[in-house]
Amino acid sequence: MENVQHQSETTERRVMSRIDAALRINYQIISDDVALNDPYDPNFVLPRYFLLLAELDQFDHALNYELEQLAEKDQQIARILSLFNKKLNLITGSLYDTIVQSMLPIPEHVNFSETGLSFFSERPIKEGTYLHVTLSHPENFFHIAATTQVVYSREEENGQYRTGAYFISLHPQDRVKLAESVSLSSFKV
Image (cartoon, rainbow, N blue to C red; front, side, top):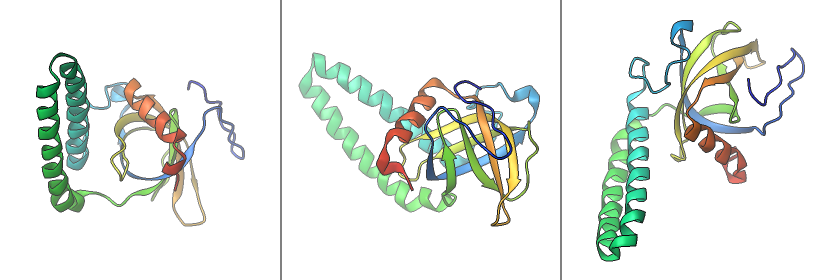
C-alpha cells in the first residue's frame, strides 16, 4: 500500500491526510481473481444511480473541454453551445431531483483518503477480503468505483463493525478527486 504504513490493532499511523464525510457507499465482496480488474468493469454490479451520475459527470467533463477548445476558434458558437449546455443541465437537474433522488441510498459516515477508507458494516468482514466499492458524494463532487482489500474489521459500540480497507485498483483521476476532496475544508462533516 503506497504512502500508508500498516496499522497495529491499537494505533493507526498514516502519512496521507484523511477526512470524515457523509457519502453514498455500496460494496460487495469479490474474489481474488477479479480484484485487479478495472473497477468500472461491467462485470461488477454498479448501482444504476452510480452509473447515471458517473456518466453525466464524464459527459460534463468532456463537454467543458471541447467548449474550451472551440472558444479558441469561434467564441460565438462556443457561447451558444455553452447556453445550450446550461439549459440541458437545468433539465437533467430537474430529472435528478424528481427521479434519481428516490433511487439514492442514504449517505453514511465514511473516513477516507486517496489511499484508503473506513466505513461501518453490519457484519465483520474478514481481513484480506477484496471488495468492490462505489462512493458518491451527496453534492455530486465525485462518483468513484474502486477495488479494495480489507485491513481490519472490528466491532464498535454502536453494534456495527468499523471496516478499514486500502485501494487496490483506483483510476488516477479518481485518486485526484479524492485528494481534492480531502483538501476542501468545507467538505468535512
